[in-house]
Length: 333
Picture (cartoon, rainbow, N blue to C red):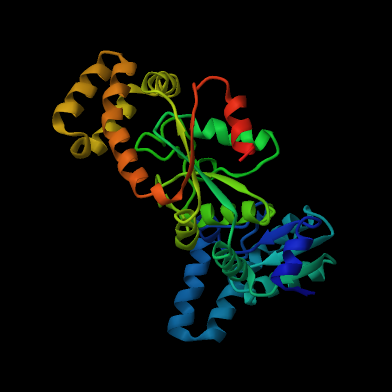
């Protein structure tokens, strides 16, 4: 049985999904929650590709069968462990998924093949990034607790998109410290798409102000452009409190890793400020280090805010401690 992409999105919550692409394709980007059972692994796929280019399709197909043959029983066994009925997809919904369905079908496992494959999923994702959202952007200087506010809004039942969680990065040059490895941009887009599928587009959605790039991943261009046209609320927290919050956040970081990250903004920080921050860091004075670094980050934020004045809906002062009052004010907007 073949499924279109909408049928797939509905049925996947009831049935296991098998991605039969190679492990390399899967690592680059995949649909959340699927199981990867490669019909051809990286090396085998490369060998089939060479034969296709040099000898034609028929010879490439024979090569594929020769390579899969010795592993066929293991593939069928692995697939059957998922259940009696599965959904299968490859890149374009073509030969790999069709053959896989045929192999496991002969062993009496019922299959559903995604028409258009993973490519259909990616196409729908990019179409979705163009669709309008009722976004409300939370802005504020570095250390203002924007992420804490976003999480508290979610706890109160508000809709949020946590880009930093999806990107596994906190946005600044230090944002990757003490964080898991980042996904690929393709995987980040897939995970963002999954979040959008779960949201009610008619309701307000809170999102933290971010640059186009978050560490090594990038927001979809259409989605980022939409963020740049939405209303902004600014959270204002005094510098002393922000220094304290950032010191607590980055204090446990490895000193050498922090210094390595800091060298990436040497030019923007200025040689004198960089040397002063490095000396304070090596002396173990993280608060003084953060204070110097905010010289650059606050200036950069104010320059960015100046470009958003026509979108600035309201400014809220916060003591940086109890999140409930500020969240209540935001919900009341």
